Length: 235
Ligand code: C5P
Image (cartoon, rainbow, N blue to C red; front, side, top):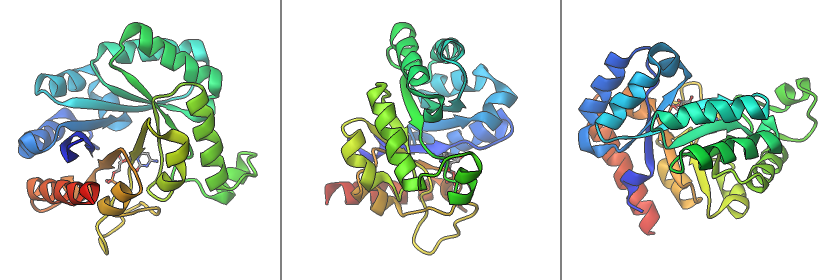
């Protein structure tokens, strides 16, 4: 698959104007955009439709987590927006993940359900406070296994887990954020890797925000990331 099919730019903006200005600046370089809670709660379905109108693919990162019936309803609503990837929390359990997958299959066969394993902000101490005594790594594997048994179309994981999850998830999708160039500012991310390393480790899709959207020249930054992904993929 071409690198452009595997790069998702995160539109972490509070309103549609700066988000769409970035999309227009990136032009044909970028095919996929992630709309998260910040932008979606500010602008709603309209911003997804505007992206679709520009011929873009949308990853709706709403991290749904509720009882199966409620999540199924939310998935049906998300399916109507034209988004093609939607996140749910694996922690909602197998019945909830399966219910999301079923709702997507009935309502919108183009919509794929991606399960979030352990948030990258969680460490051992944070997990223990929730009553979980597995290490983050074991917990990620456990939840990824569970999500696959519940027929999720893929998982979100950090670049440091993607190699270990490959066996569990392949040929389904691994969506990997936390991408940073060697020596670049990590911002608030702690478990980062380069686009090259994440690609070599088998990530299917990379989610990149600030390294592109806050670059002096976002289009050049996107181009060089795509080149890095392509080179790693071919090797
Ligand atoms: O700017 P940056 O490249 O760090 O953006 C990464 C994007 O991926 C953000 O939108 C962030 O919310 C998202 N994300 C993440 N870690 C997760 C899940 C999503 O960084 N575990």
